[in-house]
Amino acid sequence: MSQLKRSEFVKNVLTLLTGTALGQVIALVLSVIVTRIYDPEMFASLEHFAMFIGILGVIAGGKYEAAIMLPKTEEEAKHLLALTLRIGLFSGIGLTAVFFLLSDGIGNLIGNEDIKPYLWLVGPTVFFFVVRTAMGYWFSRQKNYKPASAAKVFFSAVSEPLKIGAGAAGIKPGGLIYGVVGGHLVAASFLWWRFKQQVADGFKGVTKAQRAEQGKVFSDYPRYSILGSLLNRLAQWLHIALFGLLFGEAGLIAVGFMGLSRRIVLAPMNMLATSFSQVYFQRLTEIPDGSQLRSFYLTSLKRFSVFALFVIAVIWILPDQTTTWIFGEEWDGVMRYLRILVFWFACNFAVASLGFVLHRIRKQKQMLGLDAFHFFIVLSGLLIAYYSGLDAFGALTYFVIAKVIYFIVNVIVTLQLLKKEA
Image (cartoon, rainbow, N blue to C red; front, side, top):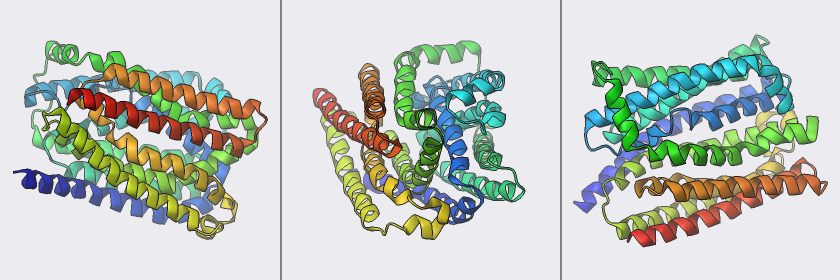
């Protein structure tokens, strides 16, 4: 039986990896064209937009999406899914209004004038993000990973050509943002269509009382996880928010360099990690024993760490001009940034994707503490670098050191909590 479960686990991971790999191949191949149409400062607008989606998207559904795999019955899970999407819809509407009305102030705050006309699109895109995430958990609950895999392919297949087409038409930097919005829209629509195929009546008959009941059962998710997720995401994107403000035009160019680094290394690694974690979380729900959970976590951590070390080694042996040869002359110098960023990317890949184990043992309070520490140490690193008179690259180095310290602490705390569960 154990061998059968392992075989099924590997099969499910490979199903998601297929879509991930295909989506990433499309994105990476077409990025050779995209980077020749848009310069690094334009990529700063893409990074700022991605920052808003990355921060707001994970809290816009009330964090209930992370609990969709936990209810005992399908009906209860459907009620929780309905609640998540409803919260996501209202969040999206509210964010659209806020970013439309405050676009000038927000653009000035992050030191980026060019992004102002496109900020109202944050709201709709956040809603599409919530749909994608929640539906992903719904299908993972049923061990049906093909829809999520296909959605990743659709995202890249729509997003990258839109960027190229809009850029060729002279829509800059808006084309980069329209590509992201279009990708999320198509991927979310596809998952909704697959859900309707599976559940013909959709949410018909789901009452307010049923949604509220599930909301109450899993109330610890919004109570603790919203603030924790917000702090965690702020820590992840803080450098993008501050570099333009603190370092001016040089900071925006650095943001563009970091954006390309994220696109060609972190994004593929995150996609791989996400593919694993969706199956991993479902598998965790089937492990009742605390010692087995700890063993499974350690085994997965070791395997991920080996791959992460391999990625670090590859990046460090690549020639200095690698990104210039591939992406064009304007991207000269990216390898210098990438060689520092890869330590964060590697730790994020090895540790963050396994964090679902703390959801499994319902340690929301401890997760909030870890997220608060994450935000504090990253902000401290950036401010110390700035007030020490360092340039953007020096600040980036301090930022990455802070990230590595956080991930080490995260592993230590997680192992201790799992030990208590054993």
